[in-house]
Amino acid sequence: MRPIFLVLIVTCGTLPQRALADAATVSTRGVTAVGGASVYREVCQGCHMPGGRGAVGAGAFPALAGNGRLAAANYPITMVLNGRGGMPWFNGVLSDTQIANVVNYVRTHFSNNYAGTTTPADVAALRGPVPKLEH
Image (cartoon, rainbow, N blue to C red):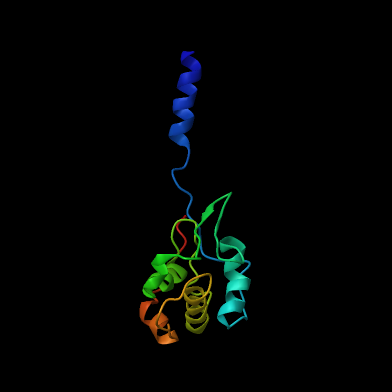
């Protein structure tokens, strides 16, 4: 039994702790959609699903429907710009207008009714340099 136990310890110790997404690349290069619903369909719904309910499978994609974190507009702007965990960043891929429009869309759809409108200037104020891939 000891050799099996030892193999399990060695194997578990070498598995990656967490996979992080890189920049959005192939499927989002050249996104021409500008309206919030169109950007959502082209870029977001593949992971967050058409009804914004999220999904669990090869990864965990949080629901946008009824998501209280969307109440503060800076949260979704920052997530779209910088990504986190399995969410890729879209800084350098989507324009300030595209991001403002999709943020407004998710904050007012999928059982969300959050006040306030995000403008391209709001996005520009939070946009930093495009993140670099770490190798």
